[in-house]
Length: 319
Image 1 (tube, helix red, strand yellow):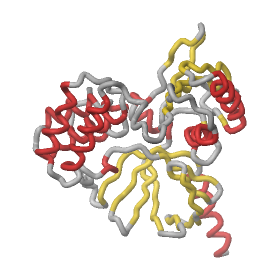
Image 2 (spheres, rainbow, N blue to C red):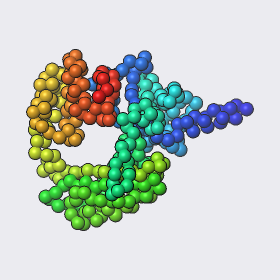
Image 3 (spheres, one colour):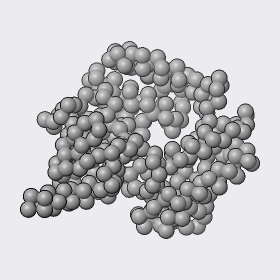
């Protein structure tokens, strides 16, 4: 009878855990927010539970699932379900991780609903980090694409950035592959074949056709950040010098350095620039300049950038 009871208890827990979960927030056990300069205050993480394995941002860990406990080779994690949340509690850290299923995440945060666009006279949706087709290969599509980039050898010296887009249909087919910005005829041709071959890993359960667009840069040894625009050497200098103060909690001096980006007129699609705006916002918060902090977080991408969203939710009016 005891064995039967355990079987009945564990099985539903496995079923409830199965699938993809998105990190919403992390708090201390008493519910208080973690330190604002903790990188985990606002960040993207995806957890996937499947067949006694837990995958976190592409890193797979074997687990044993017990009633209210997940056992890994390194630690034990208490878990429970609360409303639509899966709560993971690491007693050694004193923190609670709040996870939501993708459908619950967009219900709570509709700004992450996929945007419908027109592509060649038909409607498709732009994928985002929450709602997208599953890619059933360890590390996800970005690692799959990176493997191709590492394996290719004949890069031209005068070009190092490529942009490619394609559609994953609701039937999980890869179509409409288009190299928007290529490197060479040979590279582009092999890239298209490689992406077409990725079809076997896609499983689209959203009932939507998704447009996926990837911009990747090849770092060539001794040529620096050659994927960056003409303003970006200045951005790199500001980023590195500002961080030297920020990481020491010297927020006043960090602000003086980070604020220099405002005079550059650079495109905030630059990931390094967005990171500067996040750190600048945190520095403003630490010095009680709330309005300036909120302006900076919105420049970083606002509510749809996982690096800035939780700051806006906790300290700013939604914009």
